[in-house]
Amino acid sequence: MGVDLITVGSFVVGATVRLPRVPYPGETLVGDMFDLGPGGKGSNLAVTAARQGTRTGIVAKIGDDTFTRLALDLYEREGIDHTYVKITTEEQTAIGLVYLQESGENTIGLYRGANWLLSAEDVQEAFAGFGPARLVATQLEIPDEAVSAAVSLGRRNGMTVILNPAPARRVPQEILREVDILTPNEGEARLLAGEDPTAGDPPVEEIGRTLLATGAGCVVITRGREGAVLFRKTDSPRHIPTFQVEPRDSVGAGDAFNGGLAAALCEGLSLDDALVRAAATGALSTTGIGATGGLPDRERVLGFIASGVRR
Image (cartoon, rainbow, N blue to C red; front, side):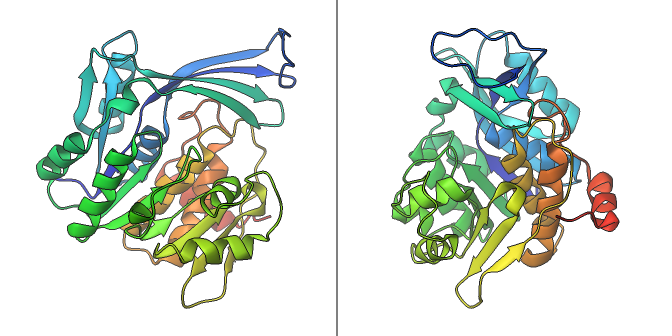
């Protein structure tokens, strides 16, 4: 049948406990909610796009353990082609330990597990098997060699290439210059630009220009409640406002943004219109618990946009 979107990424089991605040060293806090479910940046993006009607395939590695069926059942349920999700006995499935605060903000500890065994050869095999697609999306919960294979094969085959550079780390410039749309959050953008990711200076406009100079086609810096900013070589920065919601859990919001963006681009929307869809998708994702609990389908996103509830 073929796919329109190839997601080269990760699967992570998320164990979330809601606490009144982050514990200090040596402290045990009692939570009032627990969730154990599927997640991972690549997987969340794939689920988001599939729920919005995009024919989606995923390339990933998981362990041969208790959580194998959690991943495979998710992809079967969501209609995602998981032919190239490989099961390994060398490592266990990745785990994320999430402290969720009442504000919806979170702190995460990640064990990368089987994700770190994904190789360039795995990616090459999957591209050959999936055949032509419209878009490839990847992120940094996998090794640089797998990321590099994804972006170079995408470019070579005429696909639009999205890279979400998260979790934050420095990325070789030869990867960045093959990316069409680079989508860091503000802290990730500052790190990529060689700045302190926790600082507020230099201004985000300068950071965006620095990242454009790496060779990326365009840069979209997401800023949470402040929306996002689009940087293109030929235009002034454009602000994309977010949508007003009552957040319950922000885990996976960036992945949802990227999944909504990928789905809209596969649908043929312009980048400007696709970013509105992405902003609405990311906002709605925070209204559920767990990485996949709030990921919205196409009808919900379109209805939400029509309501016009912007910040």
